[in-house]
Length: 405
Image (cartoon, rainbow, N blue to C red; front, side, top):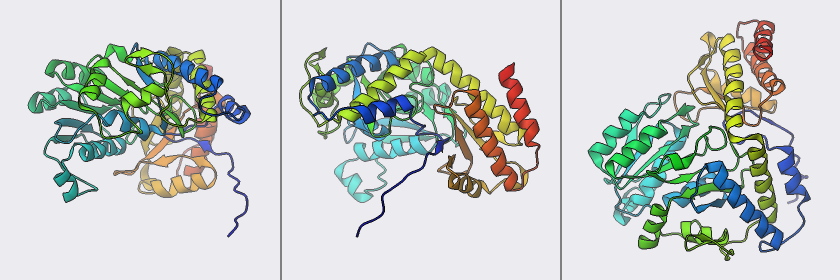
């Protein structure tokens, strides 16, 4: 069977991620010459990307590199350090930290525990601390759990895009440090958006992010990871049951061997196109400036927040790249219908993926007045078509005044 050529139209990606890739990144992807994965310029690009990643993370960690694939590839790499029987505390306050928790339960289960419920194991050695949707994981919650359970590992998402909440990374670090716990953090939604240096959190021994949110590359390129020496020593001592996402073996391909930068050794076949795109995305981020980018996200998120609140919505999130909201009055309960109609018109907003159902509107790579006005205007039109009652002209005028002031 032969199908017609696939044509995918431009979409305004205004959800939690992926964001719209910068045209300069796409240009590097398209204009890169055909080359094998060990060609000298490809290798040079990887070595330069490795150096830029250390700056983006704010770290001196030698074991800082990209794992080929999506954000889940990077998470799998750091979680590969967990062995069956390890005691782990996991903080869950949304869809994605929940998936992280399931991954950890699978990795920490014994053979018998996994076989008893292979898709949803419940090992006794993993404590899942559930925080209600729409609430943040606080230092008090973390301290209480680690003091009680005294695990080997603790895991938390820095920003939870399922509910749009920022969790207490300082409280997490301090509790891990106090109780001698090795911390692991999912920074999929915060790296490249919030301004922070991971070296300021020494009790967090492993960090993972993704290519398509703050880094703003293509989803299938490289998931950034960074390991402290303490974590790598655990891997060297105990090993881990993976080859593809092995922290030490992956690092070798990036020229990180025996804890030092050197010549790369073969581990997998990397795409020259992905290397070029990832390299350019990192260049763009660092040219913008990590601190300035964080300021710009906060400024533009506030603009969108004020606009949707003027439409009668209730915002429950506190992330600066994503607005999570409840629809007003008679539109309550119609979140899925509204989002579906928006997506039919190539306006890519999302509902939450777990209850309660809310609307998520993101501003990844939309850091200018024209883009925010476009997002607010499209959302206003969608709500009015569904029967909302507000004056769009007044909303848009107030938005313009925010930017002019």
